Structures are given as C-alpha cells and as structure tokens.
Image 1 (cartoon, helix red, strand yellow):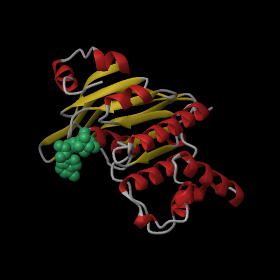
Image 2: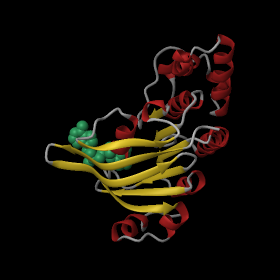
Image 3: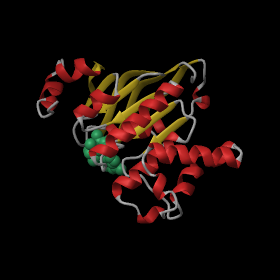
Length: 237
Ligand SMILES: Nc1ncnc2c1ncn2[C@@H]1O[C@H](COP(=O)(O)OP(=O)(O)OP(=O)(O)O)[C@@H](O)[C@H]1O
Ligand SMILES: [Mg+2]
C-alpha cells in the first residue's frame, strides 16, 4: 500500500490577463480516496489538474502535502486531456514512463505487457504511436499511468474518446490499481455515471470556484448550491 498523506490547496488562484479562471480558497485531498472532478466546459478542471501536476504555475496559492511523505516524495502521474503519443512503438511509449526507475529489463517488459493488457492494447503493442485512433491513444496514455508507481493519479477526461466497452475496461484497471496501491485519484469527467462508478467523492467547479464537495452520491443527487443544481439539472444519471 502507498503512504498516507493529504494534498492541501490553499488560496490557489490562476488568471490570464484580468480573467480569474481558478480561485480555490481551501481544498484537502486524501490518499486512498478517488475524487471525480466535475463542472461545465471552462469551469477550471484542467487548470486545477495542471496546477496539481506542476505543469502550470498558479499566480498565487500553496499546494502542500502533509503526512508521512513530503511534497517532493509524492509520486504524481498526470494524464492530460489531449494525451500525446510518440511515433515509436506503443510498448516503447509505455516503457518510457518507467525508464528512469532503474528496473531490470525483464521487470519493465512484464509491467508494460500487464499495463497494455489491462487497457486492451496488448495486440497493438508493436503498432506505431502515430497510427493510433483517438481512443487507442487514450488507452496508451493510461497504460503509461498504470505502469508507474504512483501516489497521486491526475486524469483529465481519460475515457472521453473511448467506446463504452473500453471505458468499462479501463475503469476496472484503475480500480485494480487503486486497490493495489491505495493511491489518491482525481479524475475530471463529463459523465455522471462514470463519476458514480469510479469515485468516492465529487468536487464541482463553477467559473473556477469550488461550489460542491462531498460523497459522490450526495453531490450528484442533492447539490447544495444554485450553481450545482443548475449544472446537475443537465446530467442524467
Ligand atoms: N492559456 C490560456 N490563456 C487564456 N485563457 C485560458 C488559457 N488556458 C485556459 N484558459 C481559460 O481558462 C478557463 C478554464 O479552462 P479549463 O481548461 O481549466 O476548463 P475545463 O473545466 O477543463 O473545461 P473542459 O470541460 O472544456 O475541458 C477557460 O475559460 C479557458 O478558456
Ligand atoms: Mg478540461
């Protein structure tokens, strides 16, 4: 099991010019918990994930870690909304994710094969990354996450291009990974049924602000804010 810790966000703010696109006073995320990040287009989901992943610097605010690990020890995996797959083989794309871990080749090969099989890409292991369909590219990007040893998994609409069979397959692979590692998972999604399947908690953003947070069923069925009710009125469970 991975180490117990919390990710603490305080006074986080991101703006472009005069426009504030993310403004979160306080948010705590705990290891072992799966969070669905929901909200309309432009509400700030990707901006929050990128700030947590460290790929985009907030204008102000602090992201810290408390628990048995320090911030630098927390292993974070981030799958962007439009994942990039390199032109070389699918298996090399996945192996690259653990290239710096110093594992023996046999162990790398085993992990890569397991990760590709978990996302249903075993048969395309030798295919070139630049020949893949959108859904296949997303599966490879997820295999790069599953092959790694992570404490925090940040996934930005990971199944947006997948068919339902593929979606259920990778959801099950993610659930297995969580069970095995006890990692913290934060997943942006536009699918309410998916939020219910994969998450314990839901976090809803509206115009960059946190408007709902709680057990996923509670948030989806009994939103407490006007913004939450309005957004969820379009969501059919
Ligand atoms: N580089 C940028 N320059 C200016 N505005 C930006 C930039 N990046 C993001 N934004 C704006 O920030 C807001 C939040 O964007 P973000 O990508 O976080 O939304 P989102 O909730 O992920 O939306 P979606 O559901 O469409 O993925 C949007 O209105 C977007 O136009
Ligand atoms: Mg987004």
